[in-house]
Amino acid sequence: MPTCLPTVLRRCHACASERFRANGKFRVNANHKLLDAWLLVLCIACGDTAKLAVLERMNVRSVRPGLLDRMHDNDPGLAAELLQDPVVRRRNRIALDWDDAWRLDTGGSDHLDREVIDVSVRFAARIPVRPGRLIAEGFGLSRAEVGRLIAEGKLVSAVRLSGRLSGDFTFTLKR
Picture (cartoon, one colour):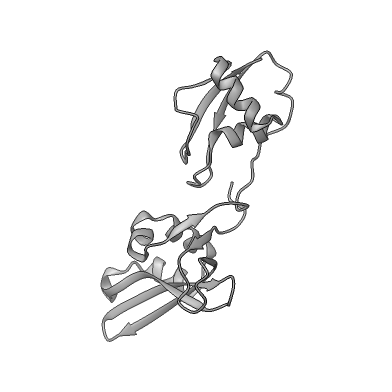
């Protein structure tokens, strides 16, 4: 589950830092019947503001009223949705850093004493995380031990457990 908005990775034009913090603030500008809208992000090093384009020269009638209301209300949920939108990320040439912006909810520790454990992992948001890290945190193991269990065939899944995943998956752990 996400705990806060991710850090935006983009070069600051003022101090050359590469990390920005999104606080959910928007700026909307109208020029006759055309709208521009930006998500504002602050440089972590110098505090300078950068704008991430959300809408560019859109006709007022083509923008959903609910979306416009959420921008005017500075909705942090909308900011989270837009940061995860690949079109917005590509248009603004940004990447996201999810370190320390999520937590793992295991639903308790009564599952740790079983011989065979079937686990289904569900993401509350599309956060790219290494499955080995999730498994290590969920079972209180080291990541090296998780790698050993994968190599021995005691930790199996239909998806590849190396690399990063941001979608739901299942795995089986045999002790």
